[in-house]
Length: 629
Image 1 (spheres, rainbow, N blue to C red):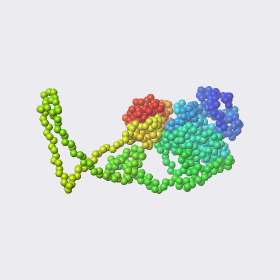
Image 2 (tube, rainbow, N blue to C red):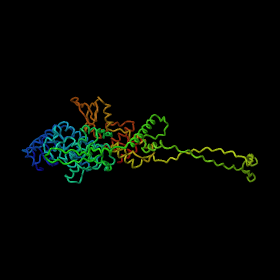
Image 3 (cartoon, rainbow, N blue to C red):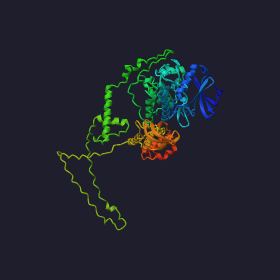
Image 4 (cartoon, rainbow, N blue to C red):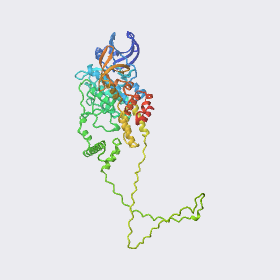
């Protein structure tokens, strides 16, 4: 294939090969543009069924329109060899990025995955197309920073009956084993978009940890492990990962399709929550199975792993999940004892009562700790409410002080006359001190009690605490802010830290108040609602009239020389530099200045942070440390 000659094209190199296709990089001489030519493998070109499947899938995919999907320019043939002329996506693959620079920052990884999820949603909603081969090497980042799927060679259309339109036969496993969904690994006939969800979750796992699921095994072993075993929790490799990102991966990689998201829109909603440092939406129904991602720190799963088995080729039937997935014994293990629940509710009620009392000015005159102090401080306070009052101090009989000594008479004769006009004879003679009469004590007389001295009030000894954060906390906090991970920044200040409590409360309050830069960008656009503004989007300056923003989608009118036309922009498509332009840089609020510094750091503009760092209040030294990372 490397020596193949195609009229009108100059072949440059072979890009990739699959079990069915070979993709070449070429220059289309008539238009002077670089394209990708996708051919069926030579051994399949003479198979009429394979040719029909190849062309039918290409025609369906040619109608898909999404920034993250490669465009199909033409379907042609060279003799009896059909081929596709497609958009060539230059730039490194996601696999290349991770192998060269290591695991990605959480926000960057989720934005890449979100773009691909939007493309897969378009493919499913438009023509019920699924990709079936999502993996890091299939995702490329072009020069504008846009994530694109490089190939649709294994894509297929799913009929209303849930079967693949290409009819490759039940039991045929299609895809890459390390990123294969459990239903694909079983060879089930009925699959849908949730198979792509699983592969996308495995791709996000790789982007954040640098590890593929079930490495160092032969393909058959990997397929079996996808069905039966689990992979380590992402925090086993990166303990700083936010909990909502880990929860997103766990949900995408649930072994049973019905435990994953019910739609791409629901999954995209949770991805948006992750980017905004918000918790994931709560699932109302309990999971029937488990995730391929194991619990953190080797925690036992809540239910037994589903016992799945391969489907024999040609049967067309699937194996139901074992009843152990919903066994009542597993549910009993998750129940909390009633006395413990009552204690927890009591402690929660006390905390809310104390917080309310503090907010209204402490009318109960309780010695309350600050609500932002560590939990152990509140535990000590709650325990103190139920503790016995201290016993009164035992009175100590005061000791009668000895009588004051009588001062001796001055020896005037031993003092010589001092110089000057003052002489000893001229000095007044001091009057003798009165001598108190000595009381006569009889045996029967009772001495009067001596007066009890007032107790001396001494201030309690308070151990001195450092005013600055410990070096490890400062380092973790600076690293989280430098990567734009506000949730990790809050986690860095959790727990017990050896610092002055009031000072620690200042840091926690400051970090809790930092808004998400993307939310500030949205607010900036909404302040110009129904007004013409110029924004930079995907590397180009555009004039728009924004109207509304819903779930990160900007509804606006695009203004050009030809007039206005309605368009929809996605906040997730803005590059970090473009977000910086929308975040207010002249705000007098330290929290907004901190968000602007985070946007600058995320965009790689460390040199611009300095003038704004000093306006971040207590977080100024933390951003100084973040600039050094």
